[in-house]
Image (cartoon, rainbow, N blue to C red; front, side, top):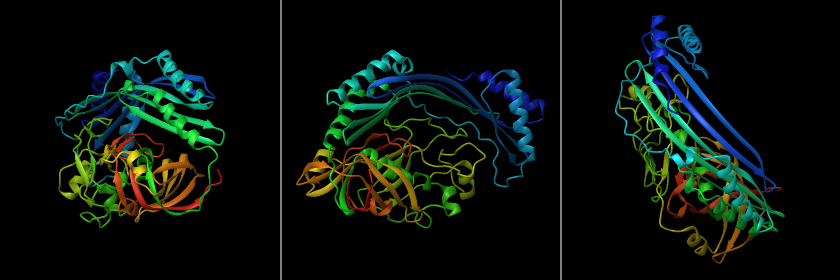
Length: 444
């Protein structure tokens, strides 16, 4: 449900009673429900409702934050007093700005009544259809189906008063078949856009094809990465498109803004209003999110800037700041990769010999400047020969530079909203990449 604006009135009144006039509050409410299944049986239904209130005063170049999950008058006074006490104990920050002024923010329509009204029965029916799809292959399925409603609001004493309501549905399934496995996952603000049965059928087909996996030697291969695999690897670069990260010299873009790092077919944007995206159209200070061209035909262009980072650079903020105080600064959160026109099937058909990868996991950074990552494939790794999927393969560990990978993309599918495990959901295509580096065969 929407945040009660009287909560901020009580926060502001409590601050004024302590002689503080500059105060900000972030108020979030969530209603989250989840149906969990394993061994082809639903075994858990849980639901949770929560409210979170986070308060930040600004006093003489100092700031700090305190939080509570209670909204009664005594708790409001207590969290304001705590935030003020913490602020007065901190050292002044010469770069700290006053609270943001109010700016108009076009709304992003991401609330669906059908998702908000989801029930355990409706989720159970959807899960039952998915389980039936796996059972028809003699397989065992496990996974989750969740729905949630959230409201995020930000208020401050300079007139910022913004609210964003959103619903979200998520379905994920893993299917086991003897020594084979398949996986599929999807998320959408409109849960009706998700078909659990279709996702289960996709995972089941992968599990069948994964039976009796062969082992081939590690090395460099042409690889077809499905969107979830692209997401989990390419999404790792998002925090580097940050003015704070750049100033600290922590990312791979240090000294590379304006440089051509990737192939001509790689363009990346941050767009909070893209229909495949989710989240509020404003940042944690109430600044509207701007559309950024992060990469244009392989050339690094824009970076995200919070208000403080923008002031230090003498430019306008982009609306990507995180709640203050923090050491991260900002990052793009609505990544969109421009896609191509080649379907996944066409990628497979055009491959003489290669490897099809469903998803990646256990990804860790090896070299932050060259953006080299290691990780493993799982739940659907296949040998492709003469334009056909031949068999399942034992999983691989990889050691791959993201810069090299995005310079070696041969084909792109149309972009779609993808869900993975290692990073937030993004809009990405499938990619056919040459010379992807697998270093060893895993033990399972």
